[in-house]
Image (cartoon, rainbow, N blue to C red; front, side):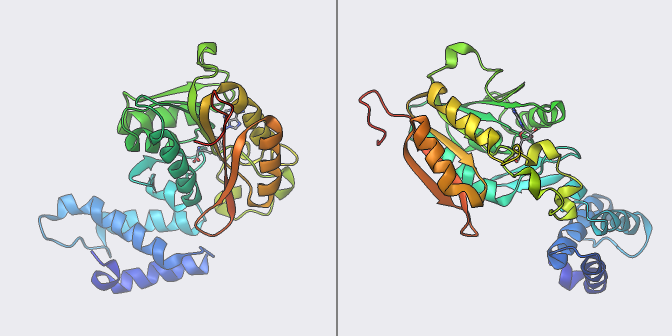
Length: 297
Ligand SMILES: C[S@@+](CC[C@H](N)C(=O)[O-])C[C@H]1O[C@@H](n2cnc3c(N)ncnc32)[C@H](O)[C@@H]1O
């Protein structure tokens, strides 16, 4: 349904209210909010009927959602879900909301996992909502995914999303990076993928309200220089990847060259920095040398 055509006055009023509140994409968000209320009211309205949005409970519901978005609560929290590649993941307050640039990171991990033998093992520390883990599990046939997070609220949400997508393929554990993994997996990971906290502490205070007031600081800040967790993951990759296995990390666009240098110093090969859809350096990709010593495959 094109809500701009079906509800032109409601659409214009919501869009203008969001614009006045400083919401960056008021027309897009107005459309999502109205569609959400129409879909929810549809069942009670009867087949083919168009729910009335100017009075009664659909109008009250729309007003409540618009007020939250106008207060700069992220759209994904207001709707309760985010689209991520081919799936939808639930979002909850207090847990990092998946971003479009991370879909590119997940895509690289998916390609690398597909290049491995059937039954590949993909590990995703810093899983948050579990979006990357769920996308990998859905898009890579026969894969097994192990995800971890330090935050119990993230672990709960990732388990919820895993149950809704590919429960038999994903396991979510609580703990620091790779600590929750059995030691027997050392040297056996096919892909290590993560979107870890990577912003410097000095960035705090520069974020839009949707980020600064809603994403947990521990999901954003990677120590004073921002790269504490990325550097730890690169060191772990050398120990935990199988020969020929890949590490795929989301990074701060300002630190591409530096992250690549850390990866090479750690002993990884085939190091590349790939760009996201906005052209920013966003994904660090590297491989552990295979048994012949070659990083290339
Ligand atoms: C930027 S969010 C990424 C969430 C999700 N992977 C995504 O891309 O949407 C980073 C996540 O890392 C978690 N985290 C931070 N430090 C961690 C650590 N040392 N070990 C495990 N998880 C950690 C945070 O709790 C947060 O959920």
